Length: 174
Image 1 (spheres, rainbow, N blue to C red):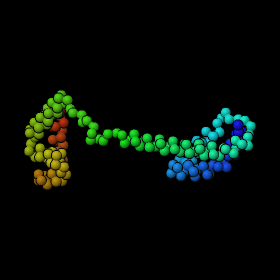
Image 2: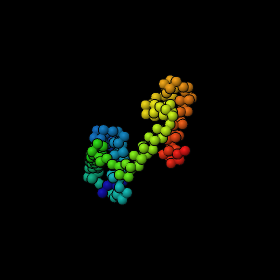
Image 3: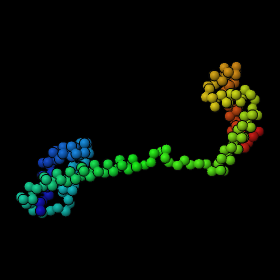
Image 4: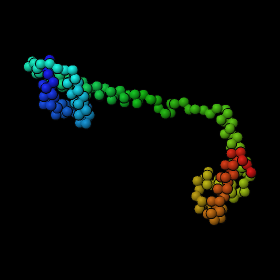
């Protein structure tokens, strides 16, 4: 059995070479540093005590390199597995689409009917202003020019129509 002092000496004498070795395997010096730290923890367990042996101390660098190699390869395997798991999710277009229930369809159709009635009861300029703004994407300036009114009046028309539609949908028709 090899004592802790010998293990520390072997580790510190080979640390730079171990980091370079791990870097070649994993491709990142930062990751290699972490691997070498983990190798040190495994190389010098807390319960390792004993008398130094010349024969076993000569094998320590090879043992330390083996630990670093195994940890590096384990990391690469884990990364490949993670990538494979990410790719295993089905594409978005193959996922089933949630179809609305019949009740949801009836509610939406009723709301559309209510909005249609509310728009039909609006004065023509107010209805046109709302349709241009909400459905056509026109600016208030463009609406004002089309209706031959001021921008403030175009804004008031859109706001009035939106309030009428909102109150209709809320059930507070006036």
